[in-house]
Image (tube, rainbow, N blue to C red; front, side, top):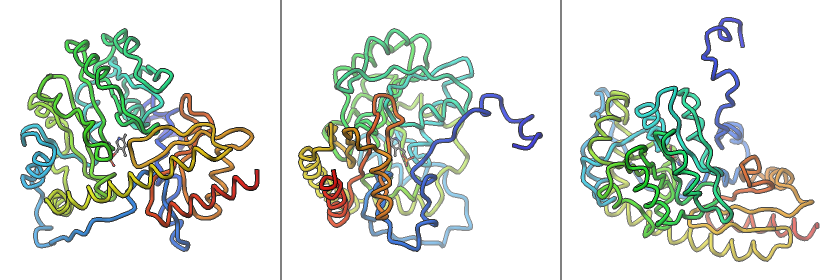
Length: 365
Ligand SMILES: *Cc1c(COP(=O)(O)O)cnc(C)c1O
């Protein structure tokens, strides 16, 4: 850091380590010479068929493009007034924190979980209260409620990344009801398409302190688009609209996202979900038979977390795969997840590649 940057940068940012996104660890440009199997960011291996029309690129986009909002509202079964489109679900997380937390405030998170809640809080200068998941990766409801007066937002990721399982519905409702005078509960449903029946969407109609986050980055196969949705009541949306950028959704993003939310687009996504869920279940069954796997975490998503048995280490597995240009994600730094790797579900050929490398690992033990 130069002296000037060091003098001027906000104190709380000095020690902050930026989010190690899958793409910061391994960029697409650096791997362009070789065919890489990307199984480190829970992306969809398939891309929907979409087109763009540049005739309006000289114009600023609508603040919240109506066809896009109507398309998502209809898909999610809510009203258009309950939908805010954002640059990915990540921007939804950040907007909630910027809108509802000052520097004396806190958010509650339940690790091991998605890393961006804590990063967004820290870059904004507000505090993070960790209420770790209990054995069996369930929510510590008592622990959360004991801290409700210290926090403004509670982030619950269900299905949870990187463990892959769902929070108990009764726990979610219990928390929402018990904090109704103190906190907004944010339900991150980035992976909900892989277990669509488990959605908590109806809760935004029943309670005034519930927000649901959604994205086109996972099941819809559009991570590169940067389009997500914050679904909640009109009061919370109006507050978020004070903070969001004036033109958050670029014209081509709105065009592509709107197409993907057509009946055909949704059917495409649902077909991919059926295929990927089958591949996931097959992979889970097989992984459970490998002697070097201590635990296969149950998953309702397009990824599977494996706990490896010592002396096999997550970093050596990462290396073995990387040597064959297959990228997985090491989750060992996360609370309670020592020696784990996360495998995103790819297409059948990619899964065969993964299985063949793991089988060789098994043989060399
Ligand atoms: C991928 C992911 C997000 C971010 O989604 P974007 O729409 O790509 O910003 C949010 N939450 C969880 C749990 C995720 O895994």
